[in-house]
Length: 437
Image 1 (cartoon, one colour):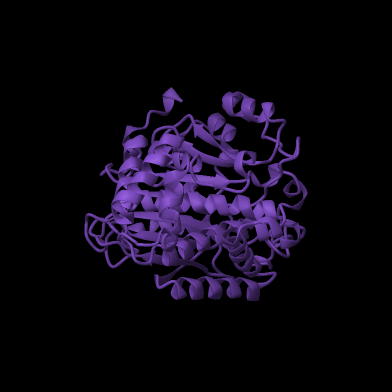
Image 2 (image 1 turned 90 degrees about the vertical axis):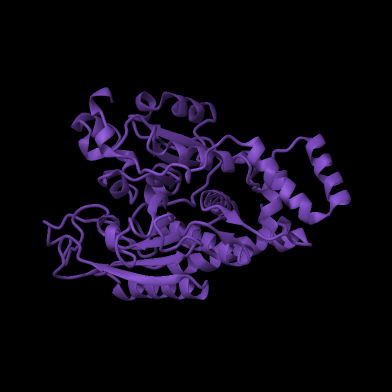
């Protein structure tokens, strides 16, 4: 699809995504290009501030801290219950660093950063007049990438010798990250973590799968096989119980949010058959699911108590050009197509819809529905003709204020109860029985 055939709104969204992406199209490693890493930090800070978020940085020491320190950057959108034990914080996270062997890092992980910033931008603009009960945390993690620090010849001045140094530091610091203990300022109800979420390829055999997929996830494998192994889907990874509510909410909204890709894209729920902390899994089973544990969601799962988090990915080095460009110089904006931007925008729109649901957003009635475009757009999607007609009659007879209220009621009536905010307790690792895995 060319830009000339897009609607004005879609063109604006694609332009916004590409504008963000250009700030993550250079190496961001503390040794090979520290200037690029600092430029990314400055841009994230500036963007958060321009969106009127509460912004702070969290410095930490990676495993080998003699040559570098890490910096996680947090932007908070306070809810009406901020600072109280009743707050239920919701987190959207992505890492901004790269390995030393790439000169760009556009998909890994510029794409995840762009999706996070786009959601923050849409919330700050489309929903600036709306109130929400629960607070949102936007977190840019440092040092997700790791290296073999024992090989000082290949990796001089190595800092992070184990995956997820930044998110592990953040999760370990949750009890005091915001003006005291987390318990006195609410609880973390869940997290959406993104890593490589832009690559889209609808041609047959553009997708490869880890060898254990067919045995571990036969239904997902069968669907991808029947679709001729096209790399046209978003992978959403979670655990069968601990992340079920968040997975269900994401699935619900993915099937209702519009995209110009229409039926040429989908998502697959990867429901991993275990609960609680992966570190407590038997080693053979851990190795079998290791391909699904390769990013910043892992520290949330390994926390005690284990925290709910889902992981979004385009499968990284298992799809089309990234099979050769993963951690290499060809992972750049030169590979980006209009379809990739549409794919990325749909993911951002779904995250936005989920976030609005779980943080209990409430918007004032408006005279012109175009003033809050996402409020009515996702309601009409998936409705029967008679339902649309009924809604239109209500709009004519009763006016837009009542129609917006009716639309909200319709959404609650139609969908299953997937709200996360009713679950007051976090997933407890004490309930895990790994012998049943």
